[in-house]
Image (cartoon, rainbow, N blue to C red; front, side, top):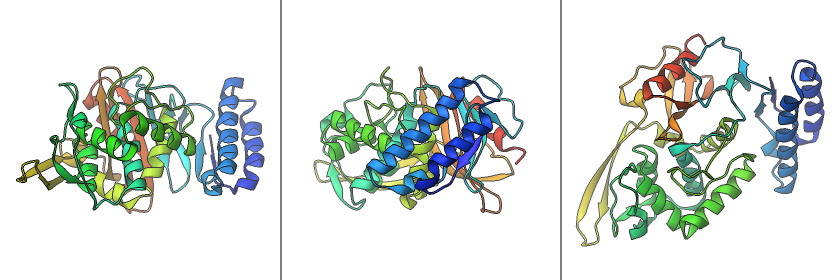
Length: 323
């Protein structure tokens, strides 16, 4: 395991050191993974003229277990990143393709924050609420006038697929147009093994990511204070103006069990917030931002593809237990 924190001009030197360090201990496919990610990262950083893309990138050649933790089951993916030390503490199936479910919405939120003024309002189109009966909703209706800020909270707290669709249509012109924006942004963030077809994560075989790519996207999200403020909010209330001019109140509750008080986080950390996701195919997922008790060390962690929500939180807590 190696963490890259160099200027772009020294990235290839670092790559050689990584491969030299792990060439004997790792098989060819593992070193090829490292080479692939670092080379793509370098080339893309040059292409978009953003040298900062080459900084603070954590890369592992294979599964990592610096914390000596045993998962309770073989989940689709799990990881723990120490952002202060820039170190991968735990990684399980880091580069395997997974279905992201509603963790997709972190990318939707990122594009919203980059493209609109949160104080602006939109009128909810009918297509935004034309969703399957099993979809999680925040409760907006066609014709409602609502601010982008309120849509952000409706997107990330109760995981509203209706909020995701409304954002996509408003920002991208259509669901398909917004998906194109998502995929372009994923490429910019070096999430090169990710492909989106919708803004909410309802299942599609062509809608996928990897645990490592999800880390890259979430790492970009948490650099935005509005995003962090949102995911750290236990509950939120807002008011919309209906098509008939009357006001209606909406209440959103965070789906993160730590923030709801349903689950108790380990004593070693303070949970900042995160994003949950559940579909039949993706199973139960959570990506999260936490900090050490002294607030000096930020962490990104995830558990993807757990058989139950209990297993998600048991493994999430387990990774932090002995820090």
